[in-house]
Each structure stands twice: as structure tokens, then as C-alpha cells.
Length: 323
Length: 240
Image 1: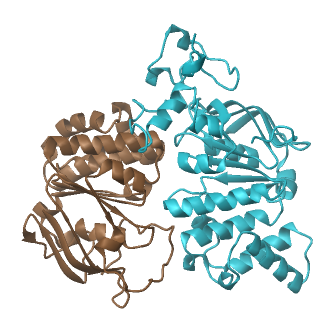
Image 2: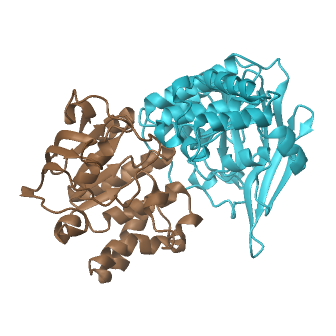
């Protein structure tokens, strides 16, 4: 299921992002993230809002504000995204190496121009197509790849339904034929049928080529439907990385936070995790989840190392493995 | 009883969004209204919350017909209903600290002296911590802001609660926490609930009774053009 024999498209090693605030405060938005995404694979990054998921995405695209400091490596082919200068990012990365599928397509599209004109502009900027007819047909085929209906191309964004606006934004992201697609909460606010539909279409773009997809979401059902692997983020750290089937099925997640997150689903126990996530500017020295964890012990005062893709001092052990 | 009879409502007289919709919520009952985005369920919820005047039909609140909506609605009716919207960012004044956001309904109705007591009660009930109360909306997460919005809806102890996609933007744990807070309030006060949403699993788990949009509104009216499925109507309803 997981494509592990192919070289990773994106390889993130020890990525950390700190925001320097007035008064010398430091916000630890992302800490020591390690993961890889291979071609033909989808990795879902899940976690509560405010846990650092979107900051990680912004770091990969070089879109962090000026008070941010990043460390570590994010290799996309030969290029280290974190070390790349603005010129490289603009000319070779955004749109060409990484296609961004935004959170709110209705806000991402330019409201005063038709979908066709936005697609043609993107085609003109990112591809070799030159001349009116070539650009026009390239834009039409880009729309077709994202299953955007040709008779809606001359409409403005406000005339599109949520699902069609999502496809228009996906079409724009696919124009540059980027090896990595980055989808930041692509299903927020959509109803369940549209979520399933959007997610299935995204999956199709991974299945039919050499693309990798990194999807950031808090929608666990969407993650289960689309992803090969899931990475669970808590307070800026990736606390668990697991195969989707094992995570959502048996043996289930191993980190207490992931278990709590799944138990909060209405189709499961529907019980919230007690307490609230910690402030990223005021993280404890040890395990950040310890104050909310049922299994907390003295060991949790020390930061748990990440061993076999899990950062916990006492991860859940499946029944049949217990002595 | 909260009764909606034969409600037709919308933003353009020629193309109403809701046609001939009827539903009732008994005291203490939790009713879930399920429908796809853009079907008009939020507009119906706004009618029930006295935030949008319908073109025709009647709304009975505890047997009394409602004659005025929005700012013209009498205060004792307005304060009987608490509303929580989908997007906390759009429904919170960015200039108010959370404590003022929650206390505003009390101040607006001349019950300023109840503020300290109600804040002390509600802060733990919705899962907020005292240090968050001094922050402004941009300094808290969506989940924390929605908790404050729920506290604001509960602060006047309404007999009816209307939750329009209250948890659509939130993660699983915050969703479960907010639903638990609503249910605790209802268990303590016997308030009725109309929860509008598109998540069938959630509403089935949450509510006593589940209504599908097709059962509530008139069928066979043809598909209405949909402006934008993604854009929320703003908190301030358009002038009618």
C-alpha cells in the first residue's frame, strides 16, 4: 500500500519554525518535524487548529512572515526549500515544483475575473504555451484534468458552487505539472458529499502520475479516505506517523493524543480530550500532551524521543502483543 | 414549543431560498436539521432565531406568534433564543476581549451586575481558562473563539438554542467538547435545541430527532440557482 521503494519527492528533516514576538517571546510553531512523501503517495497531516500544520505548509512554500526563523531541511529533489532564496522560490518552486490547493477556493480566486482568464494567465506564466490559441487550449485541457466543466469557464468565481470553485482552484494548481501538491485544509466548510468528492478527485491526481500529495486537514474522515499515511501533529511536533489502515482500523493509533482524537469522533465514543492544547509560546519542557494525558507518569517530564514513528513514553500496545 | 409553519423566506422576493418550510421543536427537545450546503437551512435557522423576517408563514414561540424580527423583536423574545454560528471569526467583534464578548448580551439588556457571576460559571462550562478571557479574537484559536461564542449564546440563559453548523470549522475533540457543553446546559435548564448541519453522523449522535431538508421544505420547486456554496452569509443579515 505505502509506496516506500520509490525515492521521496519531498523529504523533511528536522524542520523547526520559531516566531519572534515583540518583548522577546518565542513561539515554537513547528519543532523538529521529520517526514517524507513519495510519488504516488498521499500523506495527511492531521491535528487540532493552531497546532502548527499551516505554518509547516507556509515554510515549505517560503511564505513565512519576516519574524519567523526556520531551521532544518526540506528537500524537494536537489533543492533545499528552506535555504532557497526568494528568486528561486518564485521562479522555480511555487506553481512549478509545488502546486498549492488552498483552504478557501472562493477567496483564492480573483473575484473580478473569469475562471478562463485566470487559467490562461497561469498557463502563460508557468508553461511554454505561447499564442492565443495555444494558451486557450492549454487552459481548457487544464480545466478538463480537474474535471471543471468547459461551459463554466467564462463564469466568475461568485457564480460557482463550492465544489466547482474547488475544482477551479485545483485546475490552477495542476497547470505547472508540479511533482508535489500541497493541499491546505481543502475540505473545510464543505458538506460530506462534497468532501468525499473533492478528496476522491485529489486522490486521482496522485494515482495517475508521479505526483505526491501532502494534505493538511483536521477532518479525520477525509484523511482516512485519501491518505496512505497519516502524521499526527500536536503542539508543533509530529507525535505519530502511521499507515492509514493501521491507524483508523486495527491495531489503531498508539499515541494517547491520537487515540483521544479518534475517540472524539461522533461515530466512536464522542468524548472530548480533556483540557485544551498548550500555548505554542509557553510549551512545557517535557511531553506537551502530558497535562491532558490519562497515562501520565514521572517519565513524561522529559521530552519523549521519536522511536519507530511515535513520540511517547508509554504508547498504546495492542492486546495481542501484551505479555 | 418553537413552531415554524409554512415559512417562505429569502433575499429576493422573486426567488425565495426557503419555500413552505415547517418544523417544530418541543421544550427540552433536540432537533437536528440536515441538508446539503446551499439548500436554505441556514436561512430557516435565521428565521427561527428572529434574525431574518420571512416573506410569509408564522413562527410561534411558546404559543405566541412572532410579529417582529431583528431589532424590532421585543427584548423578552430575543433573549429567549441563543444562537451560535458556523464561523466564529465572522461572528465576534475583533475589538472585544473574550470577557466582553461573553458579557455583551448582559450589558445590552441592563443586567450588568450579573456579569461576574455568569462569567465565573460559564468559563469552565465551555472549557475556557481565565487567562484566555483577557485576549482578543486574533489571539486565540478558532476552537477557543467558538467556545466564547457559545458562552455568549448561553449567558442570558435562553430557552431555545439555535446552532447553525456550530462545529463545521472545528476538529473532532473541540466538536465533542462543544456538543457536551450544549448538552450540559440543556440538561440543567431544559432548553430546546435546533441544530442545523450537514454532518449526519454528528447530528444523529447529538439530537433526539433528525429532519432532512426535503421533509421540512416544499418539494418539487425545482432546483434554485446557488450563488456560492462556500461563502457564508455575513453575520449582519442583508437589509430587507
